[in-house]
Every structure is written in C-alpha cells, then in structure tokens.
Image (cartoon, rainbow, N blue to C red; front, side, top):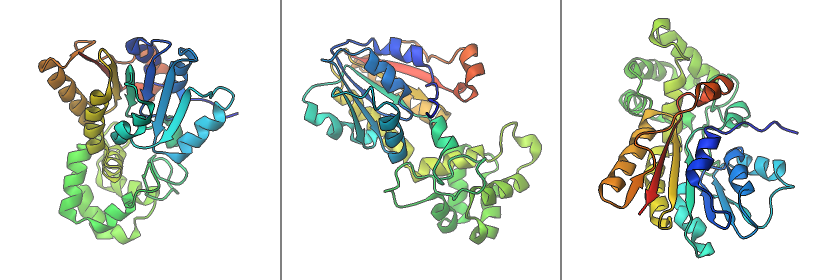
Length: 294
C-alpha cells in the first residue's frame, strides 16, 4: 500500500475547525486526503464532509487508499474551490467549517505523472497543470510569451530578482526548452551560486505553476465564495506557503474583521513547530490563518 503523507499543521487545523460531530465541513484541497480523513473521523453518521480537488490523480489515490473508510457522508467532488458555491448548493445547508491547504502535496511533487511540478524530475515535460482539462501548459508560456512578458511573470509571481536575466536566456534558446531538465539547466547557468541558498529554479517554477493554474485569482474568488457560503460562527481555515498567497489571505481576513463581518481566531498566523519542520521540511513556510464568521 502507498504511504500516506503527513498533512501540514494537522492538529492545529483540527483544533481550529472546532468540529461539531453532526456538522457540515468542506475541505477545498483534498490532496492526499490527510486533513479530510481526520475531519471525517470526528463526524457522526449525521455529519457531512465534502472534499474538493481539481486533480484527477489525487482523487483516484484517495478513493483507492481510503476505500474501506469512505461512507455515504464523505463525498469527493472534482472541482476548483473557486466554484465552492456550485459544489455545495445541492446539500441545502451552510458549512460549519471550510479548509483550504494551498500547498502542492508531497505526492504531486514525487508522483507528478509527467506534469513537471518538481524541478528535480529532469525528464518530465513542462506541463504544470493541476487539472489536465486546462488548456495552457508551462511549456506553452515559455514558448509563446515575449522576454518582457516572461520577466514580468517571474518577477510578479515568483518574486525572482534575476527575472530579466532568466527571461532573456530563455528567449535565446526557447525552442529547445521542453522538459524540466532543459529549464533547470538554463537557470543554473544564469543564476550565480551565491544568489540562492535553495534551488535557483524554485521561484521560476512557482511563477509558471501559479499562472498556468490561475492560482491567485482562484484564491481570491475562493475566499470570497467560501466566506459567503459559511454558516454563522462558521470557521474558514487557510494554510498558505508563500508570501503572494499569504498576502491575499491576510488582507481578506483583515478586511472581514475590520468590517465586523468576522473576527480572527488568532491575532497573527500559526506556524509549524520545530518538531514538525524536522519531520517534514516542506512545512517550514506554512502559515495557518483562521477567520470566524459573525
């Protein structure tokens, strides 16, 4: 049997949701199913969990891995959380809690099914679509966008200081950039070793993935709709992993608290403990924020 990956900030999420056994909960980012399963275990047969994901591979994995556990009151839907209102309208009740875990799952990085999410998988194609029904791939962007457009993309969505230098080199040789390895080798050539303690491709890959999947626009829409459908005193929990996401979440939560429509469970965010980071280094940048609807 496949090994299940430990979800980030699991105990903190479960505590923050304050689960009512007969309540209705939505996990907007099913992933490996770790958060969903822990929520589900706390529900009575009268409770309901709806888990959403746009990744067919994630849905297939969870349905297979948890096939003995999935009963009538754990429903898995293929969708993007920007459509949460459409997904839950058939249930004719408002969620008591909604969770969004905005990070890529470990499985998406380790078993990306030739989609090129990880800059370590050199032979994979530069696809990066979470949902294979989407039209544009990362490779399409690299080939179609101008040097100026790529510079803006890497700067705005990857916060990459050497965006122009990388974009210039890509446009010099973009007809030969088709795989993860093609792109990472070019970036290693352009970025000085002293510029980045981490893999120098990381920011460029982040930028391409965000744009291919329209992640930031979907996040803004998803936050808006999630808060709208939430029940009174319902809780919206969001885990972000980079500053672009976190800024959107923080501003949205602050505006709702400032207008009196909701209040923050924590003054700031909750971060992983040192122990969790040791067990799962990918959790290091995670931030959990929780908003309660008035």
